[in-house]
Image 1 (cartoon, helix red, strand yellow):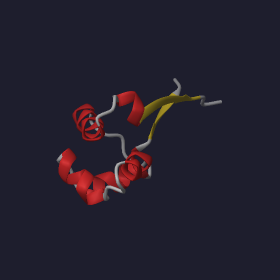
Image 2 (tube, rainbow, N blue to C red):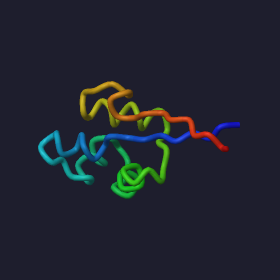
Image 3 (tube, rainbow, N blue to C red):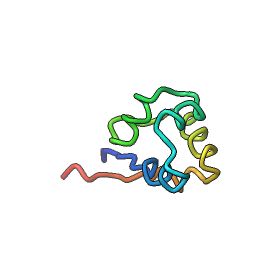
Length: 74
């Protein structure tokens, strides 16, 4: 079975939004700064609810924030 990777544009979106800090995004998305750090480093995949909250902070669609990529095991 192919593995999957979730890529994101959170860091880019933060800087396009007036250089929003990780702390400000965390407050607005109702999570911790450590969660935002892990997301930006692609070490953590958010819950669907958190993904929607982050997209809403930036007033964009989920597809504008997150990208699903299948990885081939071979």
